[in-house]
Length: 243
Image 1 (tube, rainbow, N blue to C red):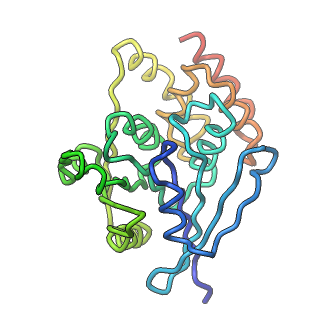
Image 2: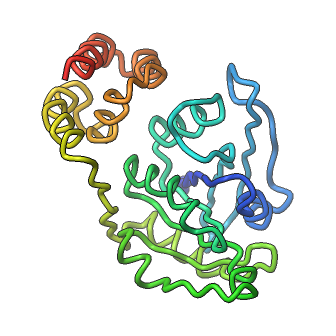
């Protein structure tokens, strides 16, 4: 029987050590090119852990996934349409508050997330103390402290990844509560979105993006292989504008 190859997405802000982690995990087993139809660099690598194969995609470093740029669209589309087995979100432990914005956006898109709290060595030098267990509890997903350039925490990360792909970790991602007005609009739009996308995509996240007028997402939904989305997605967008 052929072994399954697990797919891992690697997301994070620029300058968080994301590429360093990618290099540590993949070594020489990596290659780069461009994403199809984009000028954005596509970096892909492979690693083996406990005799199982993993393919890891280093997504473009972005501060958000709101499709304001080609980098953001690439990262968003891969998480939504390719449905990686695990998404690793790399955060800078010395600038946690700023980095959490991206993490919260990813948590709205998928529940198969592990937070990689990188640059812990730098945080320690600056006297920054982070309650890892409490942060994990608040976010509802595993948080693994790392100093990737020193290869500290890598074994714990790999073990956490392995446990997640095998269904041994249950996550309950934090649901961001928006203003009352926005939540009311989400509630009105959700039934229609669920009717259109079913269980294929996270309905609350799709509703939020439609309310924000994300025409890029609408275009991506319409041109994705799931053709049934075409008319329904357009209708959902019109409804979002009128809510």
